[in-house]
Image 1 (cartoon, rainbow, N blue to C red):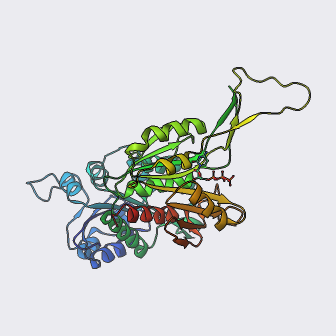
Image 2: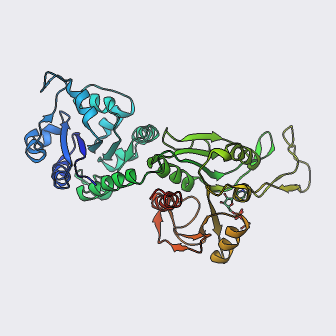
Image 3: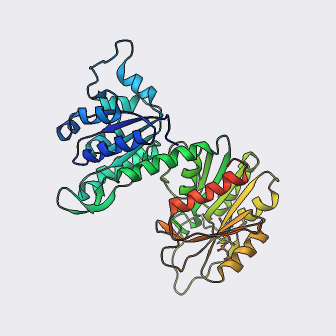
Length: 401
Ligand code: CTP
């Protein structure tokens, strides 16, 4: 996948620079054209010559060192790249990127490029958890920058913990995978995702909700967007962490979510209904804050509309519908019943009572049941990996893969 691709490697100053040397070698061995740019601090660890020899290209270190007078180097380099990898990315460089600072060759080129940017952080275990770094990473993530998570392990500062630069082989795998996904893209497809808990109002200060964080749906949205789909997320989760190319429709209640989905249903190629929609909502909403009275209180609740069932039952033949089922018993039986009742193409079922599956964590264990009789049981995976599987199924079903 790497063959003939132009990869620009940005190297910032940390002890992990030596791994960037190995990465340069692995990328060129995989057939990529590699150009390297380094910050001043990176050059304290390894001289540019090492990168020059391995990449067989000039190394860029200074915005004002124009190697070819017919072009402006940082713009030329930015345009040349099919993909930019920042490895290692220090807290300082991440901070500059998040704030649009361009005060050297690396940061100026990063601002000028329109190529996808992958960042592989490497820093001390406490630095990576610092609110400022977390905030900067979140901001870049929302800007569409992708991250290669640092590993747990022994750090040069003597600590053991998260912060070690991912191994060069793994970084190459990530990039390879990215180019593969680009090939079988969902380009031009419109996908609507519902995610997270709904909020059912009782009075101006109270509502009923559940534990769903929306992570599973957000991951599907990100993966579909990565493959070029136009993704709309309908959610009641406040300030969802999503890349900026994903359109977010903010709702509160099950009824709002129903309206938002149905208004947009016609235009979609696919639906992924990952929201934990309330099945019941208060029959009466109080205009003023309810005052407590002596004794107990009983609420009358009414059923909400089943959005998945409505979409499944009214969908066109060319639209694909995926639903979820969170169960604590008889998973297969319940999932198959939902598949049939809601006329979905797939139901992604999980047993939320199992360790590693469920609402708030980062992992899930699911089985995907298809209306075509298919059944795919997946092992314990990161929610991101489950989202990849779901998007791949979607791409296949939409005739793209
Ligand atoms: N769903 C929906 N609208 C609702 C309720 C559920 O779109 N009002 C969707 C969810 O997003 C999910 C699937 O339906 O994709 C879950 O099915 P459901 O039968 O509602 O699950 P439970 O609420 O767990 O149902 P049950 O009480 O029957 O287990």
